[in-house]
Length: 296
Image: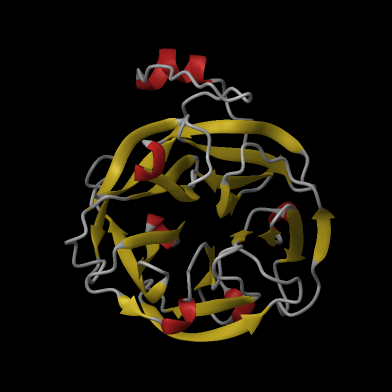
């Protein structure tokens, strides 16, 4: 993956989105593009759950999203199928009723592994968030060949409470690699073997500005993306941040902006299908949640 381009270039060539000013000491450019999925609270793929949490793309561009009720209770894992050849407003359709999985916990972040420990594809969910629901556990949700949700198991990581987790099959020269984020710490793990050992701390002071909340992460062959959302102590700009690192935790680009309307638009996660990046936005006050293009 190449370094994220300046907003000015994508403005001229791709999107036509206007630049949004900010009063933050750390200026940002708007990387939030067109909406690809609109999920009202009445959607059968939420089964009454009101809060969008972690999101990840699986095989064939399928999308997996965790929804919880307020307070992080009673999580369900929903599955969305790719429909159509273009990334348009009908790119994903609900695959049916979601699967209740109590051990998903808060479900702050999701990772996808195409062949977890030789047992086939799996979605891996962090059970906790960093502060309100701390947990060192992840839930391994096994999938069948079509991507349907199957049995699950819990694995405890030795690195403490985490809220960000991802896997890239193309990292490490194609051997694959995991990343976990714990507050300002970044840990990596080889793509094979048990998650209960073998972790390496590669960075202990990740860049962070303006007191935003840790949300999901994503990773590719060369880069890691770290999302941080607006919260009750966020400056009045109301923007969400994304930070881009290399696999050693070095800054590539900081303070990438995804604007929100104060607490009404809260970034939850970032994922990609090939070179197409998407962000999950939990929209409060009864508004439909959203999956939008993240301009790369």
